[in-house]
Amino acid sequence: MAYQNLGSELHDWKIKIRELALKNGLDFFEVVFEVLSSKEMSEVAALGGFPTRYPHWRFGMDFEKLDKQHSYGMGKIYEMVINTDPCYAYLLGSNGMLEQKLVMAHVYGHSDFFKNNYTFSKTNRKMLDQMANHAQRIRRYQEQHGVEVVEEFIDACLSLENLIDQRYPGGKLPGQDKKEEEAAVEKTKVHRFETKGYMDKFVNPKEYIDKQKLQIEEDKNVELLRKFPRQPVRDVLLFLTENAPLETWQQDVINIIRQEAYYFAPQGQTKIMNEGWASFWHSKMLTEEILNDSEIVDFACLHAGTLETAPGGLNPYKLGISLFRDIEYRWDNGQFGAEWEACKDPEAKANWKRETNLGRAKIFEVRKLYNDVSFVDTFLTEDFCRRHKMFNFAMNDRSGQQEIESRDFKSVKERLLSQLTNFGMPVIEVEDANYENRGELHLVHRHYGQDIKGDRAQETLAKLHQIWKRPVLLSTKREGKDETIRFEGEEQKAI
Image (cartoon, rainbow, N blue to C red; front, side, top):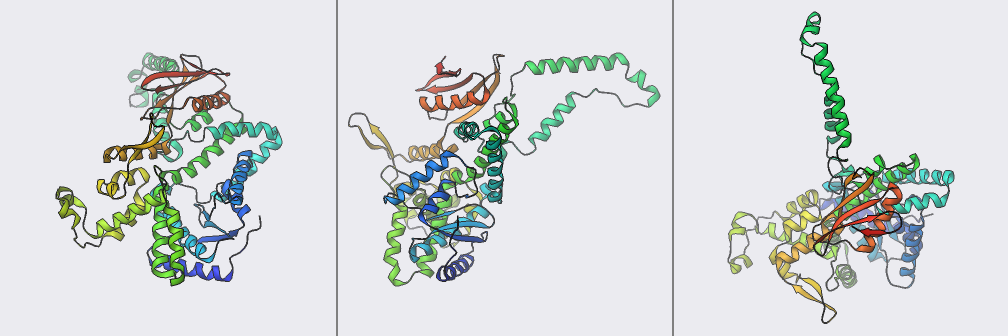
């Protein structure tokens, strides 16, 4: 692709907006802007923002969908920005100058968030180069084993890319490997009492040493009969890489999919915060410093379109910016702490103003330390819910229409948190890789209120079976009843 460089006017505005972002306290990676045509933007978006990504038919399918949406006026990608250092951002060449200014201000908000939010602190900032390396390896495997063979295996891996441990980068607690190694080594050591050399045969007699060696061998045999893995493993991709009967190139492909899944995971974990933060700053900078009088109405239309929320839907831009504004207002006016929480007088709370002016510092602290789940759990208040008319929808079986199910704050908050936890996807863990001593893979669905859809369970088990090459089982709940589904290679069976 041959991207366009910024024109002189766009370049001037980039410098102005960058200086304004610094003035407002944003701390970001340097941003490299590229101007793309609509087709180029659709192509980059289909590749997740990485033009260097490995080839696969799924990316081509996504490109066709995005390109047609743009051609028929059903959707438009204004910008894309990726978490790298420097931070690369793509501008749509057909945008007007007002749109470009909004997008550039929005991008600086994203770059600040990427650099400072804790969730992104473990990510690879040189992922553009890493993606190119992945693509080179995939192409080499395609040359060696055939395009169809490699793509079929990638299909299976991509179907499982969400089966990682969202809690820990890499899926393991810090120091976990080292502790396990030390414990394993300690079990194989023969204990000897300290003594001088000439006394050793008396203090540590041969019978004593031989007895210990025999016990170690017995312990090893018992260990082999125990359930494997010892503890449930949530990072299913890592487990498959280390334990499935795979060729070397297949292990590498799973590792590539897993690395990219962990790279993209923080974006899913902070969608509300990230978009809310960027929208907060593009709105502030444009309305206070950038726009002239003739641009105010057009900006209002663009901004309102970004924040528009369909009935029963969730717009991360709208919820995010509204929560950041609410936090800033509350901390500017002292509406926090023990005294505020203890106050039960609605009128007193409505007129509460302490002029503490801590709002700006607080939102920067929140931007650094929270993800979407903790953000919503901590700062979504009952008063906020009421003012923003948040409620739960459900299908009315009689009318066949979506209707308001509940306005109860606790119910609304729980529903929202359940949608955000693990991206709203089911939590699946490897329970036993030698189920009933038959080499079968037994997985468990940790049920947090969401049933697994039968067709999706079947597709997932089929892909797992393709990699594990032995029967695969999944224990779950459906409509409150325990159920185990078994896949033997042709179809799933409930047992």
